[in-house]
Structures are given as C-alpha cells and as structure tokens.
Length: 141
Image (cartoon, rainbow, N blue to C red; front, side, top):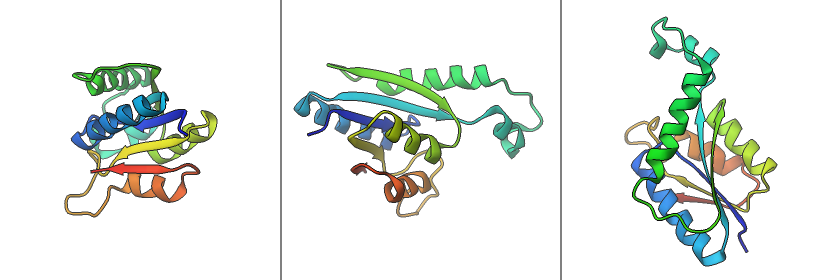
C-alpha cells in the first residue's frame, strides 16, 4: 500500500514522534522512508529579524540542516530503505514539491514544530500541508 513515506522534521518532539510512527508504518509495509529538513534560503534569513545583519552562507545553513537530520535519527533503529535530504526554501512549498517529485505515498508529520504558536490547534506548516498535499497525510501528536 505505501512504498514511499516522507517525514519532514525540525527536531521538535512532534517531529520525533512522527519519525517513530513512520518507521513503524514503513516496517509493516516494507516502505522507504525519507527524512526531510527544509532550511531557509540565505536571502530569506537575511531579511528576517533573527539575522541582526549577520552575513549568512547558504552552505552553512545546509550544514546545520544536516546536523538536524543526524540529531533527528539519534536513538532510532533504522531498518530498511532510509534516506535523508536537506532542501533550502519555504517549508510548505518544499514539502509539497518533494511529495510530487518523489511520488510519495504517505506524508507523516508532527502536529506542531518549533515555529508553532503556543495554544494553536495545529502548526501552520502542518495545517497548510494537510490541506494542499496530493497524498494521504498522517499528523502525529
């Protein structure tokens, strides 16, 4: 039923629970799991308040994304087909693009990420992806 499962991560607890769930589903269906982290474009980062005028190199952002992926799988036993990918861009856009380009059968993502507003029913990224994805989406609390 499911051959390719995509798990976007930001290393939040919800993302880790999503990965755990995806690995269980993948084991049951012998599916491939792709762990995806979307880093901001350096140009977007420079325009944000977080930059405080600090020069940012896209390669450094990508390296930090690789570190997020490594930290995300820490403590998990990875069996079967598994790949990790870092993409620069806007999370919603890049997640939806990855679903299309990689023919993803199931998207498993956390209910909230680090950008979530406390007390909101669902994180803005997960909410927008849920409504726009062209594959089944499992939201993990």
